[in-house]
Image 1 (cartoon, helix red, strand yellow):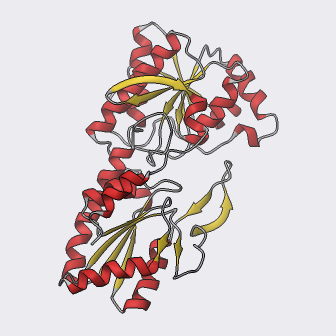
Image 2: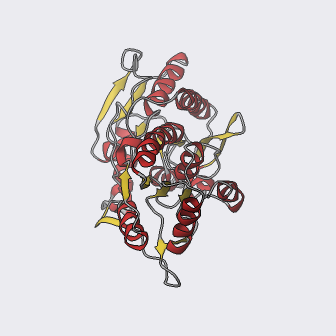
Image 3: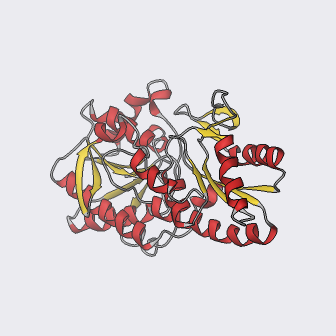
Length: 342
């Protein structure tokens, strides 16, 4: 098994479940270290009961992770296939999001025996109602919003909280509604500064001297009739999957709002805090169920497929279905949030 892409709470719950279920069948477990890099360069470690004892409550991943993309390395695909044979792997369980599972999907088409487990705190993988790590991230963001509420009200400020969400605003939506945000701004919906200021002005007329705004890092803004801006970047560097580093839209919004309204405005960027720490009970259970189901998929020869949550049941779907497009926030859900934008 390997864990790739950004780390998130619940990864160790999956690893633990895979090992314990595999050992019940008498199988040997091998951990591939640092994502796909471990299969390109052969970094492995044996996993047994002692290896996974006490890891359930720990954040991160005991196997390490990376954003290595074998398809960006010359001969990378062939190296992965050959090295899997050298290691004597009968099957691989890839735990990751769109990028990690995108690689798994390409390998599956060559006949490589791989199954997937969905992991992304953004919750933007198709075919599964939830991914583990998302619930923990939402709870961390909600707690931050609760804390920021008190200082915003005391100082009569507008406070902007930036959360993760490159192309999908699921964390912003769930944390914003749960935290009682006055506005939630997401990548799926254009942000017009005039609309933001109107909500703030309406609140002031009702005697509310502060505002809480939650914004996803991938959101874009526009002023009046101008075209929406590009995503706000930390820098122009790309990772192996072509992603830029986002971050800073909260600072830009704070500057614009304070300039236009004269209201003291502060920004808080949660960043990697959302990835760290102990997983919630929900993510521990979901990760454990995914891990067990992944082993059962291997046993049944269901390769090229991914474990998924549908309602309360764990099912499996083609990995292709999960990665061909992103799951984004729909109008119905956003309309629920609009009820509280005042």
